[in-house]
Length: 419
Image (cartoon, rainbow, N blue to C red):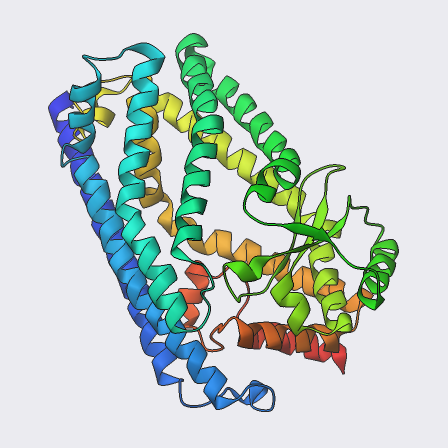
């Protein structure tokens, strides 16, 4: 097949993938909105005695607002992707930087330029999401000054950490021959493990304050639970999540001997000690059922597959030309690949969501073995209410996007144990 025909066919395939993915996203979101609105005026029977109609309607309104705004985000993402590729954006950046820089400097400038453009496009969406949608529904506690302080910190960390990492990747791509992708994968995997280890101590405190959990019934219950589950942590901490949002959560962070258990202060103020114990038992379930290790292995396996694929495309002229870029080099290959790969992998979303939901059910089952299932049910209901999580998601939308099982399914399973 003539090279020009291969190029044009790939361009048509890319356009078709963008259109089909966007259409699927818009259709799924529209279904979700209609489904939530249709069930807005009646609390599901399983929750009728636990959640008021007003709270249910608040969750519906919040979900609909976020989903409608998500449509604009999807349109903007697709428009930016086409503008950078076939619209000539990356070609223009190449024309600007290539006479001024070469080698690793050129590659770093190109990658940071694309990242900056993407961040600037996303900025008004982030502002509207935080200070209009979140504020409208009573969740925002962040000031404009804190928003931009966080933005500056993220940018600074991105430059200080990202620049050396990008330079190392570009150097490996150019110096390691045909198997560069394997060396990049080894480096990338080691870097991610390092970040998991240092994040709790060095990065997270730049954004939030972490205070040791105070002595008392709560800490006693939690330490007893950790002992029963055979879990060692480097500390129990309370995070000042309330300075940004009224949403509550609890999570593990860290890796190896540097694992921390972190509670949002908003969570502690809302749940009873026994309910917090049940929530933590669920999180411990992820650890004891090896979900965290499984996710790391899956992430590393996927990154290896993607880097191998990029290794097959990096010397193919049709890959660059078909995406509107007249030049060929490692930086351009990296940029183009990671811009377009989400379009082609969108159909895999249900598989990823399924695996995550299966892990959630397993963690719930583990929690029911080491804490009271009824306490976990009560905690989840409070969290659904406090976070305005809809109890009536569209099933197909949930299949594609939800990492956690729908509330009705999750509560029903736990109630069979609680009885």
